[in-house]
Image 1: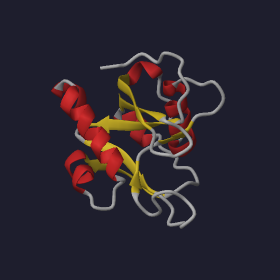
Image 2: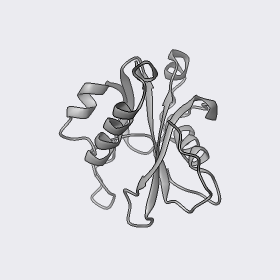
Image 3: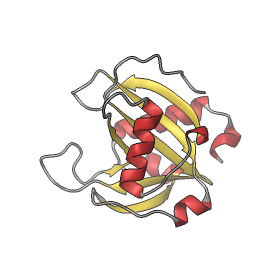
Image 4: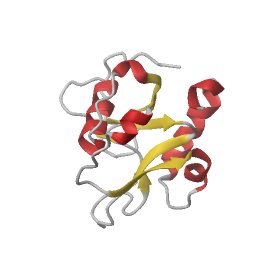
Length: 149
């Protein structure tokens, strides 16, 4: 399910990058000056310039994990309340990774411990960002089962 972007302003985008029942995660730095220090996070971040939600999320995926994934792999997208106070709307997108993508990961310098975490483990993790767990549940509840397996 993809909601078309209508050009409205938004704060940023987060991605659920899925492969064979797993989700790509990393652990945020434990700096007390950043939101959710030390918690398990998903790729994504703030919007730059006039980029679309997909362009924002895919740019962040490239900056954080070194991956260049085509927009055509995004199969779920929806605007939701922003996780940050600088904007009223954020976007959550889901895409499918390949084994070649995982082999090509070159993690950047924000956060640490990138990993493919089992979806049930991510959803149950007490140290994951709760809003992102809820967003993934929304994706799973509204997507066809074959899209996330």
